[in-house]
Image (spheres, rainbow, N blue to C red):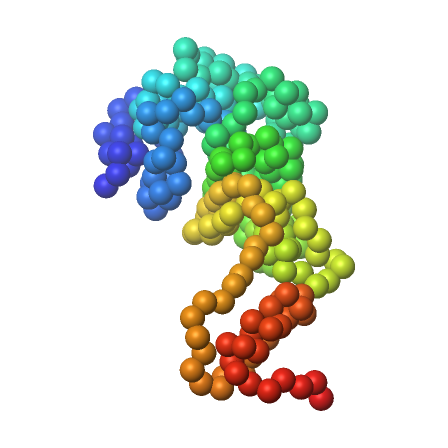
Length: 248
């Protein structure tokens, strides 16, 4: 049991509602920020319990910002936590919030969980997460619930929307004019899908490079490679394989 779950299990203060398997996911991706001057933005205040949980986990140097549509949530503000009232599906509100916030280390979407809310929040906030920061969206099971605008394989669900990120991340390898390198390609080192959670880890990404080392000892056919790989490595490949080369 990690420290987040211990806090949850022993909590007698503000209400917290979490799926039990979330705690390991949080700890896996957030532990590197503990004890540091981390900036966290969370959408969804609810009863304020998770904000106290994050204060306990990250420590007194953490600065927390939280967005909720309920004005009553303002009562949960304290010296470590700033509460902002507005809708996460309101692009102009989110633009205003981002303009006033410091750069974000961790962005957690635990808001209304509708497809529009999740998509709009990602589109407006993700680029403002630091270049080595973390984005986490939880309760993705609503992508399978029609009442939230979801449904299995429904085109506009957040799950289907997020599947495009896999292509964007691999766009350096694309030979299609329909898949081009974007800011997402250049800024994401990993996408992690869990039951009801997706985590995106950011890092500056250069075009990937590959090379060969060692000596070939059997006449194995050359692996399929992009054309530009052969142009760059033709002599090296043929020398290592010691094979005649011809084009039919």
